[in-house]
Image (cartoon, rainbow, N blue to C red; front, side):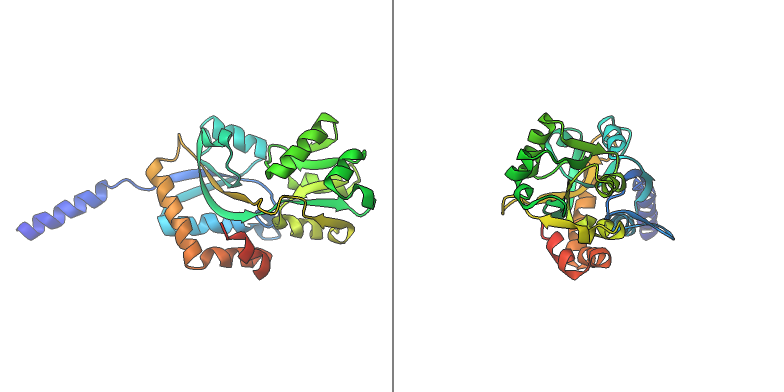
Length: 258
């Protein structure tokens, strides 16, 4: 009898335990992180979210949006989470961050740019223009450089990464600031052999990025669960395997060193 009562109590407790629930995820096109194929959408971010669902039992409802709409939705408490997002003091006010990658920003310069303009100062002294995705954040060296170029009206802001690459291909801009996850996008556009990839950042500068979780829509205990799941994915090799699938071994190993 006692055993039966105990079993019943355990069953009731299990039934009363809150389900993980469903969370809206804002995706945006970003090279190997999220891209379209003949069979639908693919990428590192998509694979991470699917693995996170498998490990936690949570359901994630993905939606493709611009970075502006994503961050506006997050800030207003209408969107639960997004991916590959760089934490900033402003974002930390309304969201928690769960890092799953680190990397460096690079300057991508058209080979039409002469040697004298292939340094930060040389480019700044020229009349050439640079393109960025609206609402993207970059490492401190590039943010300071871009701020000077904005004063001169020489920064074009694109709605998304494909539009940014089209600006370079059309000659509207002569430089981009990108992560290595975007090399496949340059290759697909036939631009990889037509540009210089330059590392202008300070040696110690690496950006860290990952999930951005709404403080309003994602409870703290759920955010902690996601954090532990990401750490487990890193420790058991799953995270590196996902990056390898889309970037190859060399870049993959470098990007999970956060």
